Amino acid sequence: MIILICAELLARVSGSDLAQTSAWFAAGCIMWVARWALGLREAYLLALCGVLTLFLILRNDHPLQDVAVALDQATFMMAFILLMALLHEAASTSPSIEKCGRYMANQPPARRYNALYLGTGTMAVLFNLGVVSFLVPLVQRGINAATPDSPRNVFREQRQIGAVLRGFAWSVIWSPTAIAPLALVELIPGANRTLWIGLGFAIYILVMLMGAFEDRLRFRNLKPNSNRQIDPFPYQAALMFLSACGFLFGIILLAIWVTQGSFILGLMLACPVMLISWLIVQYSDIGHPNRPLDIGEVVSITAKRLHTIVTLNLPKAAPIAVTLACSGFVGRTAAALINSNGVAEALHLYDMPDYVLLSLIPVVLSLLGLFALSPIMTAIFFGSLFGSLDVMPADPTLVALSISCGWALSMTFSPFATVVLLIDRVAGIRPTTSTWRWNFTHSCLSAMLLVPVFAFLALSM
Image (cartoon, rainbow, N blue to C red; front, side, top):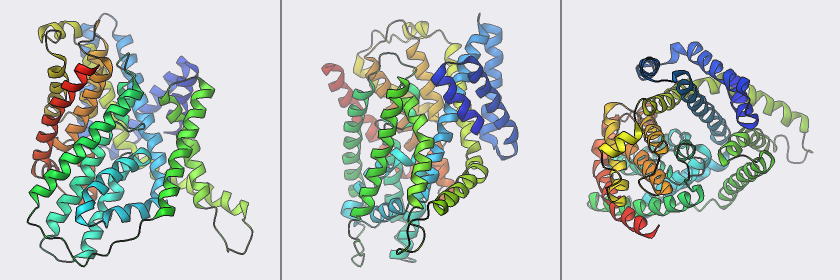
């Protein structure tokens, strides 16, 4: 995994073919070494990769070139999720983040939905997918501690975990570190990432307001617990979290300035620096308060922590890394097998009003998730398909935003979404429960909300 990360970073900084080829072989070694940890989902995706590769060889004029592009996408996805896992490792032992999480989970019902929704989206900037594995057990423990053995706990769990899922799902349309936009921005030429973030955040807030209204309406007969104690706002913890975010983006901007590269490259280069710096800060108050800081002790404990992360914790990310790598490969190869211009003409995309096309993309993408296709796979396929068109049928930034909205919609609608499977693993909540039972109405309302939003944006841009 370390070789893959270093090779992918070197390839992106220098453009070295040797480094990129090394990343391919490292990815293959990861899949082989981790084969016993892989499940049916990974086996299915690997088999699908093999079938699509065979079709490329038989049907395309330049199959090796297409396979190379797909492998580049696969190693990028694998390296990126492993680098984000490093951020998760530092965040998971941060006392400040734990205090912020507990404060969000202990809010009164009138403020809890918005607090969990906004808090999850904000913490996902550093935590990524790890925010769900951190907050969901925290929510469950908080419910059981506040009202043990209450028959209404099942409804409280539904409301709070539903808010966490929705907050994470819709954060992908604006978060600077979300893997959805970072994968799509390289596939769709002409997409304005800054404008995309701004428009995405506006939609994120609209979905929050709609979701809060739906939540109150659905649970209007559920009385709040009058004995709940409201914790004071953790100002110091919040300031430390914001400082960590500011430090991360400072490193990103420095990396962009030094390498003259993209935001994606800056983020990938910043992750290892952020990990080591964050761990040093966490362990810098070791020892007695009246004794001078022991630099050697801090370095020793940080080194031991890094050793644990690399040898024990990082390998646990192998299944999700393989899933994302396969999804990237499948999305690229599937798009290479299809004549994108022919598909656009057959579907009359150029005759379709922009807002209709932009509103349909999220619905189609989320429906494809019902066929066990992960949101990331279908998003990369759509991104590759639109990116290869001679003429874009709508504004590139809005097309990219629409695809990322489909990604978000899939995470509250598809039982096969990675975040939904993670909730099942950490909380024991069945995927069909957290999606169809808890969020079906919300998903439908979100899809309907996007229609007037894209109509307004299509007329304005």
